[in-house]
Length: 121
Image (cartoon, rainbow, N blue to C red; front, side, top):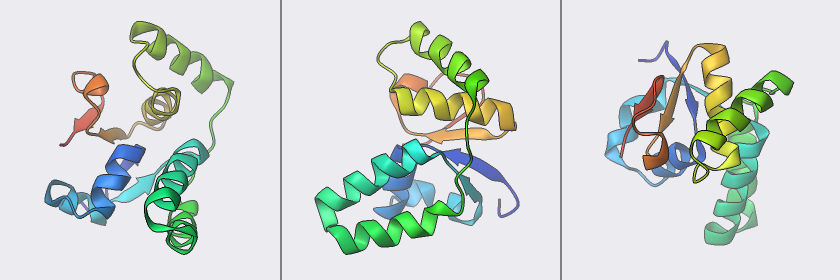
């Protein structure tokens, strides 16, 4: 698994950081995410663990950020239109994962039965 890349949604990052053993095997894979995910992660850590830890996590994952473009936005909008309960950030991430041809790693039930999803609780 060390050579594999996954698009980690924020849920997956939080589960990994909290020590969920179901995510253990993914720690060796290349983590890909967008700045939108970084915001969600930073904010969540800031609320729960403070500025210092939030900054540490931000720096750790910043090197793995990929950008998204208009085509990703268009595709994400279609994905969200199919199920409005899906978050905008996750729809963008899912669209990016499809473009990059890597699995979207999540435990979010709104994505559980979609193609290209590695669903882990």
